[in-house]
Length: 553
Image (cartoon, rainbow, N blue to C red):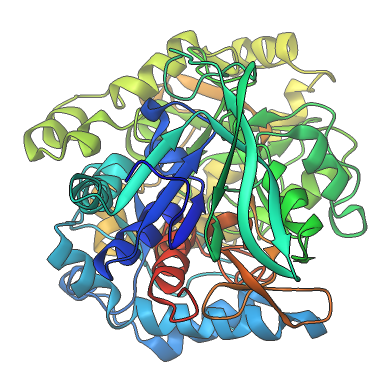
C-alpha cells in the first residue's frame, strides 16, 4: 500500500483489531493497522491468554453430558450482569447478540477457520448463590488447542494474506495521540513514531519519539485494549462504593502497554465512556517468580477444594469459594482491612486442581499435542504440572510444610498479621471431620461433591475429598494471594455496528471501537460480572461486527 490514506484505520493490533482487519480485508477494504508496540507484540494480550471461549450448546458440551441452551445462557448472563442503568440499553443488546452468536454461528465459524478445543469443558465462575444470580449454571469454558496463540494464529493468517495482497498495511511503533476531526467527523489520526525496541514480547518498551505521522481514512476503529496495566487509572476508576478502597499493593495480570491511553484520546474526539467503574480483577494472584512485565502476576485458576482464609486466618464464607464468585470475594477480602488472603491445601489438591492462567504457563495445551497433556497431567505421578511445581518451588507466595505448625510459621513470615495456629487448626479439623461419611453440612464440601458429579471435574479438575491434616495427603501448602488487575468491563459506548456514541447518545461519524476499549461491546456487555471466556469471545465478536459493519465505507 505504502500511502497515508486508506478506507479504514485500526488503532491496536490485538485480537479485536485483527478480527476487524480480517473482515475488512475480506470485503476488499484498504486498511492501515497501527500499534505502539513492536511487531513481535502482534496479537496483544490475547497471546498470553489460556484461550478460553464462552460457547453454548456445543458438541464438546454434549459429549460431556452437559445440557445447555441459549435461553439458559442468557438467564445466567443477565443474572450476572445485573444491568440497572439507563446507559445499559446498548450493553444489554450486545449481551443478547453475543449469547445468540455463542449458541449459534460462533463455533462452526471458528471451526471452519481452523480452531479446535480441548474436549473437557471447564466450569468457571460457578456463582454459589441463587439460580437468578451470578454464575454459570453449567460448564461453558472451552479451552482452545494452542491456547491464546492458537486463537490468534487463524486471524493472523487471514490478515497476513491481505497484507500480501496489498489490502492491509501494518505499521508498528506508531503511537496515536490525536484523532483528527473535521466537521464533527473523524478523518484520520496523528501521533509519534517511536524508536525501535527489541524487548521480549510483553516487556516494557521505550517511548522515545523519533518522528511524527499522520494517516487519513473516513473510518477510525479503536481496538487498543483496557487499563489493567496502568495502576493509576485502575485506582481512579475503582468503585469504592461497591468494593471499598482500592488496594495499595496489586499485581498486574496484563503487560505495561495495556495503558488505556486511547480512551481519553477517543473521548476528546467525541466518544463517551460509560460504566467506567465496572471492572474485573482477580483475587487469586501470585507474583511471577520469572516476571516479564512490571509487577507481573499470574492468576491461579483453582478447583473447588482449597480452603480460603483471610489475612487473619478466618475462613471466608460462601459464596467466597475458589472459582465461584470473583467480585464478591474481592469485596469480602478488602473488607478485612488487608489486601491479601490465603489458600491452604494439600499436594493432592495442587496436583489436580491448580492451573495457572496464561499460554506460557500451560505449555502442554499451548503445544496442541495430546502426548504433552498426558505427560504433564496424567503421567506426572504425585506432581502437578511443571509450571505449577516451579511456582511451588520458587514462588515467593508459596509455603510448603510437613506439619501445620511449620506451615503457620512460614505463613507468618510472609503475612502482615500473625495467624493463630490453634484457630487455624480448629477450622481445618472441623472441615476434615466432614470426610468420615458421604454426608456434610459444610457448603464447600457440598460444592466439591457437586463438582465431582460432572465427569470433567471428576477426571481432571476436582480432587477426591480427603483430610488435609492426614500426612498421607501432604505436604501441606499455603499460598498468599494478591489482587491481580485484569479487565475493564466498561468502555466506549457503541452500537451493534461498533460505531462510537457521544455523550448525547448519537453516532460520532467515522469513529468506531471494539474489544476491551469498548467494554467488549456497547460500553460494557458484561454488566457488573463476567462469566469467563467472554473476554476473548467479546474481542472476536465485537471486532467481527465492526469489520462487517456497512457503516465503514
